[in-house]
Length: 626
Ligand SMILES: Cc1ncc(C[n+]2csc(CCOP(=O)(O)OP(=O)(O)O)c2C)c(N)n1
Ligand SMILES: [Mg+2]
Image (cartoon, rainbow, N blue to C red; front, side, top):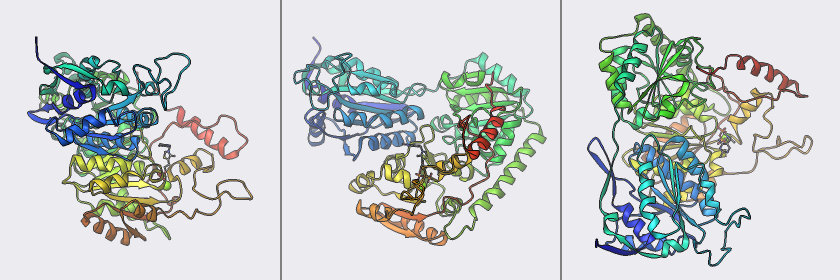
C-alpha cells in the first residue's frame, strides 16, 4: 500500500498549495505564494488553524496576509496576478456567508480581466448538523443551494468539497484552470466549515512538488499561411495590441514585427505600453476613449491584426471604430473565444510565438510608405494635442488633464500608475505616455470602483522595486479606502493621488451628454428648493480620513504644488496620500470615439430628445463585423 499522511482537509490544502509551481521559458515561480484572508467562524478553526501550523512549524511555507474587506483582498490578488503576467496567483480565504459573497465582485473582476485568483470561500456544514447555521441562506428550492452559488457564474472553475477526499481532484482541476492562459480567471473551491477540520489519510503523492508548465502554443501552419496572405494584401493595416501581448511578454516581438512591417500599432487599456508611446509605429490608444490618431487609422483600416485583445466595447467604440466596409480581422489570441471575434482569420496561439511566426511568414513585406507616413503624421499631431491637454491652465481649480500631465512628467518610466473607474481611465487611455509594458495598470474590463487602493498592495508586492502610484477619484476612494490600513500594517509603500471633485465627473459629463443633466452624480446636499442633490458641497475631508487610516497625507493646491507633493511622496518610505482638488467641469481631452449608452426614446425633456437624435445618428454607424 502506498504511504498516506493524516491531515485535516485544510491542512492538506495548505500543504498542497505550498508545493505548487509554475514555469514558463525556464523561469520557475511559486504558483500560490501566499494566502490572503479574513477569518470568521467559517474558517478560523479550519483553514485558520492550518495556516497557523504552516506559519509556526516546518509543515508548509504559505504566508498569510490579513485584508480589511474580502472584495479588497481579491482585488489585491488580481492586481498581483496581472503584474506577474498570470504566472502566480494569491489564494483568498473568506468566512462563510457575507465574507464569501463579498468576494463576488472581485471574482467577476478577475474573470473579466482574465487574471488568475484562487478563492477559498467557506461554506455551510456538509453534515448540516446545526442547520441553519449562522449566515446560512436556507433556500426553500433546494437544500444544496448556498450563498456560494453566487460565485458560480463569475468563476472559471467552481467546486464544492463536501468530503475530504474530493479535495484531490478538485484542487488539481482548479490549478489546471488557474494556469491555463486561455481559461484563467477566478477559480473557486468552496470549503464547508466542518470538512475543513475533518481528518483524512491522504496519499503522499498529492503533496509532491508539482510544476504547472505554461506553454506557448504555436499557430497552425495553415492558419498562419491564411493570416499572412490577408496581411500581405492589406493596404491600410492596423495592429490592435491588447493585454495578451503583455502577459505573453511578446512586447519585444511586437516591436520587431512593427518595425519590420511598418504596420502602425494602437493599444487597448491592457495593452498600453506594449510599444512605447514614442515608438515610430505607435499611434496611441484606440476606441471609445482612444486617440484621434489611432481612431482615424481604425476607421480606414482594411485589415486589423488583433494581438491578445478581447475587443471590449471600449476598444471597438461599441462596434463603430472600424468603418471600412471591407474591413477584415486577423486575430492572434491564445483563447479561441477572442481569436474568433469579428469573423476573423483565427490564429490561436501564444502572442509571442504567433508574432514570431508571422514575422517569418511576412519576411521582407512592408506596408506602403504612404500608409506608414500618414500614421506617423497622425501620431505627431496627437502628441501636440496631448501636450496642450497636459498644459491646460484651468482656474481656480486645475483640470484633470493637467494633473495627469504633472504626473506623467514627474514619474519615472518604470513607476506603475493604477486606475480603474471614473473619468481618469478615459483621460489616461487618451493621454498617458507609457514606455514600459508594466507601467500602465488600468483595470478596464470590469472598471470597478474600489479596485484602485486595494490593487496598489498587489502591484507593490508583485514588484517591490517599482514606485506604485494609485490614482483614485473621491467616489472610488469612498467605496474602498480601508485597504490603506492593510498597506500600513504590512509596510507596503504606495503613493495614492486622491482626486477630489465632489462626485462623479465621469458619469456627470456622460449624463449631460446624454441629456440627463448630471442628475444624481454630485456629492452635494439636497437643495431644499429643487429637491435635487445640487446644494452646497459636503463637509467631507477625505485627506483627514486618509490620515486617520494611518497614511501620510500631503494636500496639494494647484499643479506646481502637486508636482512637489508627488516628488515628496515618491521619496517617502511609507504610504502617502496626495490630495488634490480639481474642477469636474474643466474640459477633457477631445473625444474621437463613441460609446453605446442608450438614451430614452421618448421623453418630456428637450435635453433628452436632443441627445436621442444624436444617439440615433451614431447607431447608424454601428454594425457587426461579419
Ligand atoms: C462598483 C462600481 N459602481 C458603479 C460604477 C459606475 N461608475 C463608473 S464611474 C463612476 C463614478 C466614479 O467617481 P469618482 O471615483 O469620483 O471618479 P470621477 O468620475 O469623479 O473621475 C460610477 C458610479 C462602477 N464603475 N463601479
Ligand atoms: Mg469624483
